[in-house]
Image (cartoon, rainbow, N blue to C red; front, top):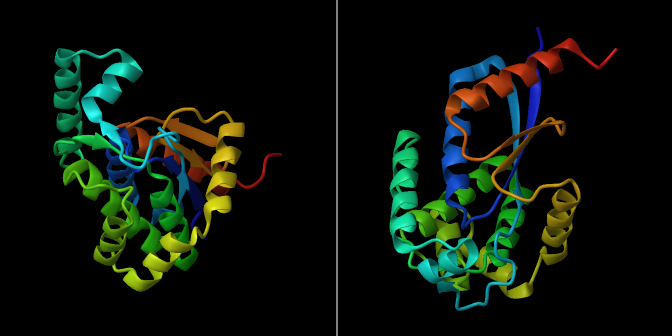
Amino acid sequence: MTRPTVRIDFVSDVSCPWCAVGLNALEQALARLGDAIDVELHFQPFELNPGMPPEGEDTDAHLARKYGSDAAQLAQSRAALRERGAAVGFTFGERSRIYNTFDAHRLLHWAGEAGAAPQRALKHALLRAYLTDNRNVGDHAELVAIAATAGLDAGQARQVLASGAFADAVRAQEAHYQSRGIRAVPSVILNDRHLVQGGQPPEQFERALRSVAAEASAGPDR
């Protein structure tokens, strides 16, 4: 019997902590499914702060202005996030600044041209670099170094960033998902029909994947 194929479009931002939680939870769900399904995983761009200047902004000041959060609320949210991250194997560090992530998305698009595995490796490397290690994911030198740690060619990464390559493609993808009503991330789209939003636990992703796989196995709607 042919295994069903599930396409997963993982719409997210490098600076989104719940995206790291969601990705690790999704991968745990995929591990539970084993070889029951074939998966095509694609990372799609979304910018939480498209107008962020190159120098970035202090994290606490940004969150207080954007959400009206005070120091106690921020501390509570971070504690909850660290707990959820630990449950799926992701470690959160201190994030002193928020940076513009457009060039990181260009680099992810480039990695995706080489295949799913390089793009996935770079996505994990970028999330760790920013959310765990507090690195500037808007800085070209940092991005080149992060790409190298993910096994990508540093010289090619440097050329992509310097040339402005894939800017139009990233903007087009962002516009596409916004036109489909995506306003928050992570938004995980299964087979272009089913949506799972937020940093859900592995069990929820597993249920959704099994349901979509069963639907794919049943064939087209009658």
